[in-house]
Length: 149
Image (cartoon, rainbow, N blue to C red; front, top):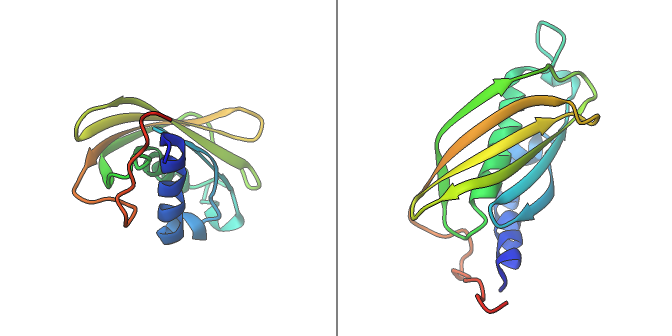
């Protein structure tokens, strides 16, 4: 299995078990080793008292994208800490896209930056996640990438 195939298999396994991500209508747009892009439409249920998207939903989109990016190596990895900076509000009907890129990855820890934009490419938020690898694998057969591929 190539690293790309492994990343895709890990994303498929996680998505099938991730009720929160699926129930909020998030879609995986891109997956690669250390990278993920997810999208989500802002629905009426996500609108708060100032008539824009509740920040918790934006955070959840970023957090899910972070999770998919740091779990592309078939090693169960969780959040150790996260921060978010909101730049602009999301509006009803906006399609938000969160793109995660691995900045560093050690034996157990990693750092991932996630950029959240609307359908016009306007910056909505910036998120940084710090990951921690725990015991276990996502795939039952403990698939390993073929380094020669």
